[in-house]
Amino acid sequence: MTRVAFLHTGAVTIGTFAALAAELLPGTTIVNYLDDRIVADLGDQARADSVPARVDGLVQAAAAGGADAVMFACSSISELAAPAAAAAGIPVLRVDEAMADAAVRAGHRIRVLATLATTCRPTLALIEERAARAQVSPALSSEVVEGAFAAVAGGDRDTHDRLVGDAIVRAAADADVIVLAQASMASAADAVAVDVPVLTSPRLGVERLAERLEAS
Image 1 (tube, rainbow, N blue to C red):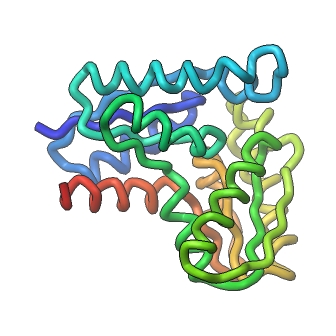
Image 2: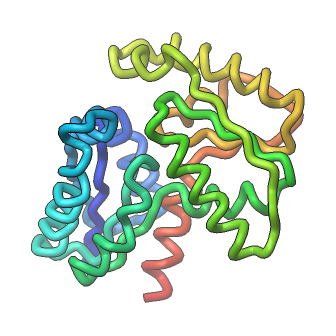
C-alpha cells in the first residue's frame, strides 16, 4: 500500500490535507509529521539555522517509516524540499508548486497574499522560479495580512477569513491573479467573490501529488 507523509508546521492544516487525501488519494496510508515551532523559529535569528536540519530529520523519519513520498504542507519551508529529498532518497513535493504554475499561466500581474512575513519571500521566489521555467516575466507584488495569522492560530477562523477576504478584494482591483501563500488561508477564498482567480495550494498540491504517485 502506498504511504505518503505530510509535513506540517501548524496543526491547523492537518484536517484540510486529511480530507483531500481521502478524496484524491484513496487507499493511501497517510502519516502526519508536525513541528509547530518552525514558523516562529524562522523569524528568530538564534533558531532559524536549526530549521533545515529539523526538516531533514522529519523527512528522514518519514522515509524510515516507509513513506513513498513526502509533501511539505507549508510554503515557508518549500525551498528546503530539494535538499531534503536528496538526503532522504524519496520524492519531496512542495504544496505550493502547482499553485505557482497555475499563477504563472493565469496572468501577468500576480499578487501574493500571506499572513506571515516569513512566507512571502519563499512564495515569491517559487513563482519567479516557475515563471523562468515557463519563460515568462510576471509583475509580482505582495502583502502580509496583519492580524490574520494570530486570529487563526488562536482558533478564530472567522476573523482570519474576514481579514484575508478584505485583502483579496483590495488586491483584485489591480491584479490578474491572486495567490494565497499559505495552505491555512484556503478557507478565506470561499468568503468573497472577485473577478480574478484566487489560487490556493492544498487541492492543487494534492492533485499534483496524486499525479506523481500514479506516474511512479
